[in-house]
Image (tube, rainbow, N blue to C red):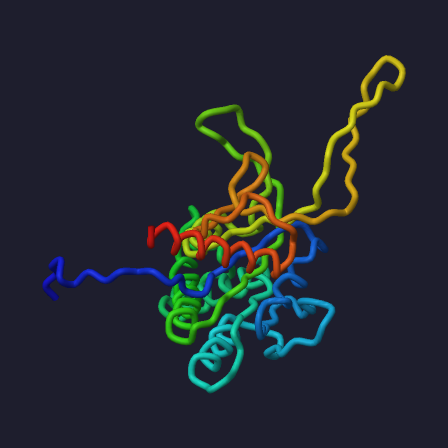
Length: 264
């Protein structure tokens, strides 16, 4: 197809967001996801996304179960507005198993017993093709069916080797680094949920004792900091209360401000 300036289109109204929310266990990621408009759950952890009832597919036991659930949402009529995937780090072993299955079907003379059998990280590179199929299915639901997608994940603390400073620890998504990079690039928002804490220093004898204190306030962080990964494409405030209502309000305010700026 020939490309010219006449083929340009103006992109204005944002599409429903593709969200990854991660944080420590019990912070409230599932309650956040369950509060989104008309949610439906792909249940991988066999947990419950909130304290309220939610429509859910049977627990996914394989990667194909996950893809079949998304195919049903694409092909069949329904009124769901938000797909919730709980969680990415429980999906990852299913992706590994599917990658091993495909390799063994294609190379029966050199089967893998596990994803690490490929050696030199080749197995984890091969998983990216499977991950891309999953992300393509998310795109189809977002682009063709108008569904928002929220993917939850647990956090882990890992060393970050910065090219500008000495190495330091920070929160990251609990995925293999190649899968994590792909998922982050695909998402419109990577949101970090955590309790707000502060540090106090107390003199005890001849030394100072450092304690972390907090009142149980939960926050949602939308921009990267040295302590954690985060991003958004909606010009959101760097910190919000951990609630769907707060995020939706911030997105609406950002969209209104963008339209006003464009009209001016």
